[in-house]
Length: 173
Image 1 (spheres, rainbow, N blue to C red):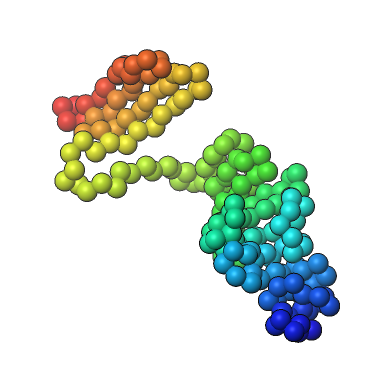
Image 2 (cartoon, helix red, strand yellow; image 1 turned 45 degrees about the vertical axis):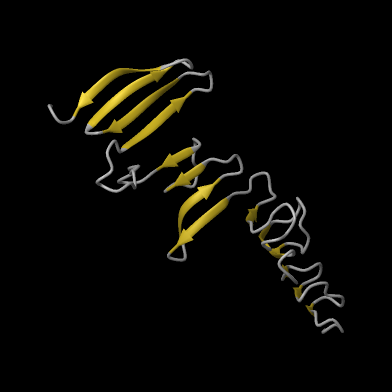
């Protein structure tokens, strides 16, 4: 059906959007930049709709966002390559797994060469380039592992001051 305003409906007699397919709309295409497009189980933006939602760049509250929403309590997001190989999963509890479908920690890396690389992207001519990992337990104290200027430092911050506990100098051995 094509309405007098130009909306097209397939499987619905009263399309509310430029293109609406299905009863209650499984595909909803935005009418303007303050609207939203949904591929989902309904054409509404609510908490019961499993959906991919693209918000227009002037839509109130969610301008320019792309949302992937799984509404099942066991819902997860997965990213697949080569048509079948799952590479990344985000579980309903927020754990992220790379190379695993069952991440047990906030970030789980699994594989034959499960390495993690953190690299400072500053120019090679920049002095004092560093990369750090902060291990913060949430009680105003943290350990800091820092790779800076050819040395590896293990520091501790008690919430008042940071002090080096051990430094391994890569220049002198």
